[in-house]
Image 1 (cartoon, helix red, strand yellow):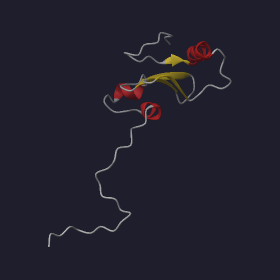
Image 2 (cartoon, helix red, strand yellow; image 1 turned 30 degrees about the vertical axis):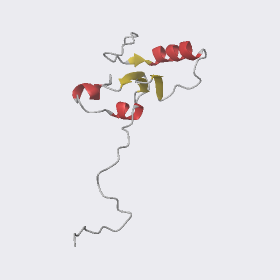
Image 3 (cartoon, helix red, strand yellow; image 1 turned 60 degrees about the vertical axis):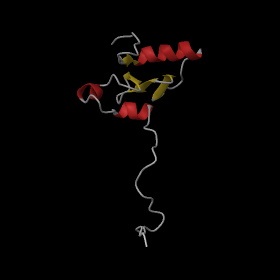
Image 4 (tube, helix red, strand yellow; image 1 turned 90 degrees about the vertical axis):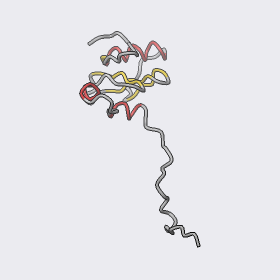
Length: 104
């Protein structure tokens, strides 16, 4: 696995590389490796399911295999690191009874 960190084309990082990065940035070694580590506002490292690697995730892509096989679709790592903003729905609210509008 590569230890090169690239934002333009995300590269999967080894657990050891991420541990070294966290130690370098914080000054102390992590007691427990986090599931998600935010490097900057638009770059995060998300642990793989087996815990042996971290996927580099940006707002535009991810280094996981799912992102490669399904381009244009946000993978679970991207959704975990950058949850979709809550957008106000155009659907009617159902906490009040629906009454059709009549122009009498």
